[in-house]
Image (cartoon, rainbow, N blue to C red):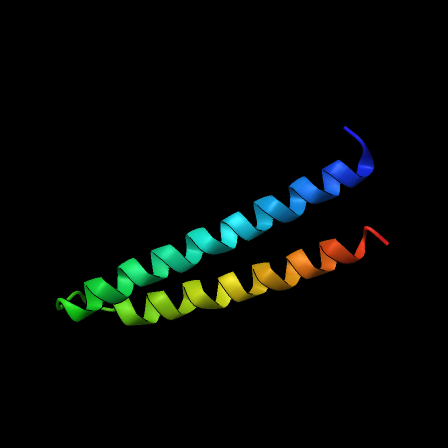
Length: 65
């Protein structure tokens, strides 16, 4: 696979991972709304990690140069 394709795949996978974390965060927020303990705290941690992954995707995008 060409270097550009490798970078593209890395970006796509990083974005996908971020979306998965956002989905998991939404699930935990629903859990918290239904009385689950500490769901909101864990959900916020997942959102923070999703944001970090988005930043990593931007950094990878810069490698295309």
